[in-house]
Image (cartoon, rainbow, N blue to C red; front, side, top):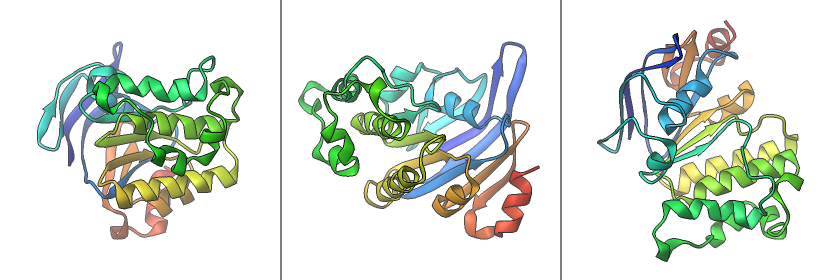
Amino acid sequence: MLKIDDLTLHYGHSQILHGISMQAKPGEITCVMGTNGVGKTSLMRAISGAHPRSGGTVSLDGGRLGILPAHALARQGVGYVPQGREIFPLLSVRENLETGFSCLPKADRQVPDEIFELFPVLRQMQSRRGGDLSGGQQQQLAIARALITRPRLLLLDEPTEGIQPNIVQQISDVIRHLRDTQDMIIVLVEQYFDVAYELADRVLVLRQGRVVLSGERGAFSREELISNVSV
């Protein structure tokens, strides 16, 4: 389980997150929802170590995660797919995937066949530069790269942003597959309400850097969620 207690985050003198507490369980998708600018990406950055949290505690499977940089947390089982993908445009698809090897012992440094089963287009484009891929293909590459590290916790920040509908469906299917087969803790930020609502087992709604709604999706009506998310 991922357990977060009283997490705070600042950018300079500005406080962005105010006492965030949440839990996320393996075999579930926990969806962080809210309008633009409420702190969703900041929460993902704080959990992943991309930006150091100011206070609070983060525990994974009972072990407390210190305030560490992203590469150190990746070695402890935290996989992060950032908003905007951030793949390496001049490296090939294969080389992008292999950057995940740095988190693994030498004996495990190989691209599993399952990666190409989940994302067949990447098998076909292994020698193509990452920057030459379409937006949807780059997003698949970013998710695949995170999976290379064999994460216990997978953080996905707006994985369907700016991509075509058929790829949105493919990525949604992959996220469901990971939930159902990998016993993985998945925390998802998703801008499209319909996609988020269909994928979520649990929801966490943020407003101005604070939690205003949290619980199993089934505990809230669709209309109640929409009204809280859109405020």
